[in-house]
Image (cartoon, rainbow, N blue to C red; front, side, top):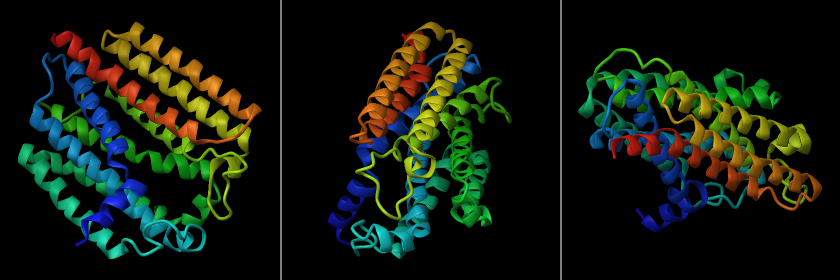
Length: 301
């Protein structure tokens, strides 16, 4: 196996520096929020964090693999320079790595707590349905908004699985109020997904689906901003439950102002949509750090 091929693939299709940081914040924040909502003090168990983090990172890679299979024909036609269409990596190789990842996920889960196999299985079940586009792929592609939210729901299952590394050792049910954090995760997923598919007219490509081409520039930006407002609302509501409402409110309001400024600037002069993708990642990272990680660190210190 030529490892350099995989280095190139991850750089182009699954940049570990980017995904690694966001998933680490996602996993650690989820564990912290779960602990605080259960009234526990102290930082999350390190083994739980490593297992949850690696399992989630593998899952997001598996989602990328599923997309490679699902979009293969379109990529051959419209995106021939991507790693798989140009022959750098073959689909069976990706499938094999994804399967190895599943074995690792099982091992990580069972080694920490056997019951974790159940939320993992639920996540896989929804993932499998997503992979076949719920058997209504043509209809979903004709309805971009439904396609968006139905695919972002996977984050609720991932969240339940991650937080279960904290609450499942002492209970069969997640802590009361955890649904607020799940709502933040769902909306952050929407922000990232829409943000990366907002393009300027010069960036649009024939055959490549974007939300600006499907909905129009104004609607795509409006949906992105509404997702940010909603994420901010649920982030503040979650933070209030944790006794950290005011700092998160200030953070959300400040970043929200930046988002509106970015949107207005793009509407006036749509040169590039890359800033939306960058800001979406920054927003997501900031909300996860502000919700669970920083408050629990402060309380522990």
